[in-house]
Amino acid sequence: MTTEACDLTPEEQLRLFRLSLETSRDFRAKVAKPTLEIAQRSMAYTSYEDLCLRLGNVTLGSPLPASIEPLPERECYNNALDLAQSYPEEFTYTEGFAAAQGTPSLTMPHAWVTDWQGRVVDPTWAHFPGSSVYCGVRFSLNFVHKFIARQLRETKQTTPGILVNDWALSHTALIHGLITSTGGIVIDWGERKTT
Image 1 (cartoon, rainbow, N blue to C red):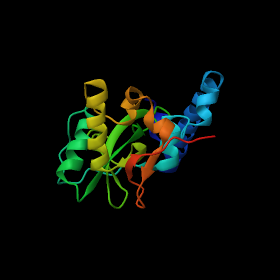
Image 2 (image 1 turned 180 degrees about the vertical axis):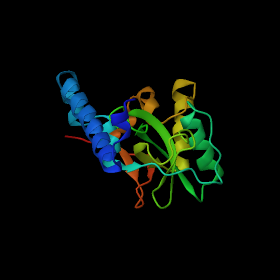
Image 3 (image 1 turned 30 degrees about the vertical axis):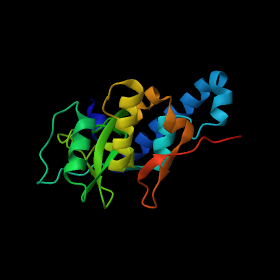
């Protein structure tokens, strides 16, 4: 990481992160077009970046609350789900893309929780306090449990993460879309779009 990258203002980090997600979304749509042109006409989203940009918000992380301990690195999906299940009145399980401090164009799939004021609480990346950038979709615990049950039924295994494992369920979220509550929390799969 260069010194220059660390000197980005929060506004620059947000702008570059959004630009990186938009570039990935547009590239995937362009590359997929020749082979998926017919399928894309009936897809709800062109990519997972498209899904997150349309249903989520781009935001900076917040410092970890004193009551929450940092959790193991490389376990973001389990960490976020454990925290959401332990404190359902305070947090919502969230998945999408994130970039660590000073690297807003290096986006990666990630999971965290969001509090009811919309603040990101990330126990996995606690060593990047308030400076990582996020864009994700909030999922109800009921939907998370429904996804896990369907994944077990259809693939005979459960691997943490909804968006990173949607491919194993035939890209259901991309094709059928997701239904959100009035608060913007995903509660179910959508219906297949028709052209």
